Image 1 (spheres, rainbow, N blue to C red):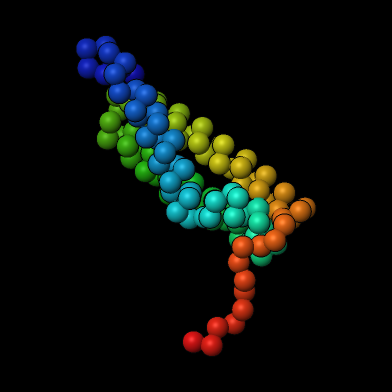
Image 2 (cartoon, rainbow, N blue to C red):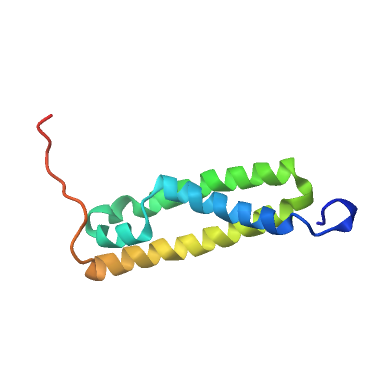
Length: 114
């Protein structure tokens, strides 16, 4: 679990890398929790599907990183797993709050003439 020579150098970077990878992959697959909350009425049907797709993608990359660099595998996995749990709850809250009281949406849905 330690770097070369028994040093803890790099464990924090690996932990943050795992967390940031998960957050980034989910952000890529979804919008932000704030936008989700504002547009929950229109997006609730597909919201968690895309959060979970992002989590699968992120999990694959974190697992690959852990395999490639086994010295920091625990940190990669811990950071990624923690971020997955946090993000899951953020989007669940956004969906629930948005459906209950979403406020004015930030998107319009009109048929385009193009």
